[in-house]
Image (cartoon, rainbow, N blue to C red; front, side):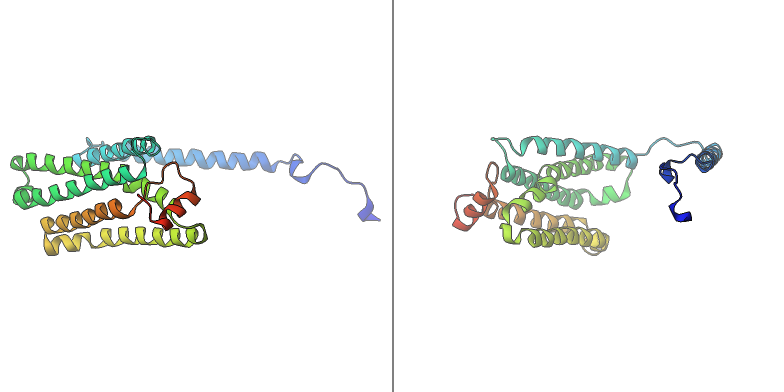
Length: 232
């Protein structure tokens, strides 16, 4: 029967056909066309301007965040530091930065709004305080929060508890980002940053009184420590 005739044992996908060269040629042609269109766009585009202060600040902040994250990663298992000291140091730096921003806008707010040469010192102060805030966040709340969340919950509820914690974290981020400009216009920068500083101060107190040091402990030991109410 026709169905019993011997056929080639070579898999169909391995049989040489002319489709592969044609497909490669079409892909190459598409890539060349994209390069051609990109080159035309670059030629017609105006000459690039020198990077402005905003661009330079964004790049500098990104690089600084990377450096501070590496610092935190190297200290988190250090006998002299650990999770709890990094959280306290980072949140304390954030609190100082936010208090400084509130004071800066209360004293030099009109000069910052007007701009010009009179505002140069105030602008430098604001940038320095922002770097302090970013550095504190990147050695504390940024990386350590997720590590502590994965350690402190009992095994039976760890997955749902971490899900709730993650939801609350990103939900708070969304609310702050969405309402920031509205609150700034409503209450002004001094009151806004003062409120943030109060929240950060509450976080320092909570970490100091409630968050245990978990460096070097197994998950079972951490759970026993939390249930027994031992020293943090």
